[in-house]
Length: 252
Image (cartoon, rainbow, N blue to C red):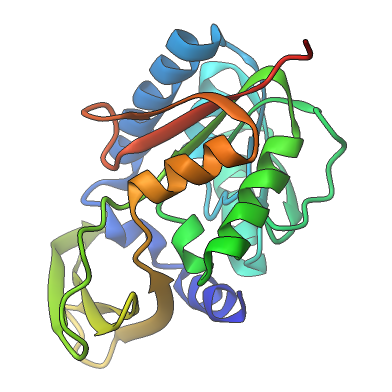
């Protein structure tokens, strides 16, 4: 995960530029997540672990809606940004530095856990992903929910293929930026290069890299079932990525 840590440390101050309007994205994602939490686990409040909190995109909206959120992340700089964003909004967000394969929380201590924004594919093997899923689920009470969001990967293209995926132009505090991703395929993994270029100052340019495993949604659903989650399913047309959900089994 050192690649992911360096990626998010470098990106922390600019992560909001992935979204056309970050504040509006916080609200849209809040609406989607709270709908799913209510429909599938009858949660309109309660405790949520955000195991890949980043700069707080999901956590901030959930707190504003009435949830108590604890966020963890491997990136210290992202955690610092999340803390600042919560403070600026007068919200209480507890944060801790942790790898989601080894979380410092008691068994069954949350009503639900989330890990959004394609966090799991930073892990480059199925065994590592299974380990993370088991650890996240361990922290959720029986009957509680595990909710993930990830890219809907198709079959990887030929080795060496380069794909460019532009986000487009962004405006933040009166300044213009252009953001894009470049994917360099290496079998079932790809090296992601994220560029953010100021359109007002050619010398201001950020480039950060990380590696992802193009693991399929069906594979993740199978892993969720294999670790003992029940009612595992994919939810589409609610969030900007497919949502993968499962419930921690109640004792017989």
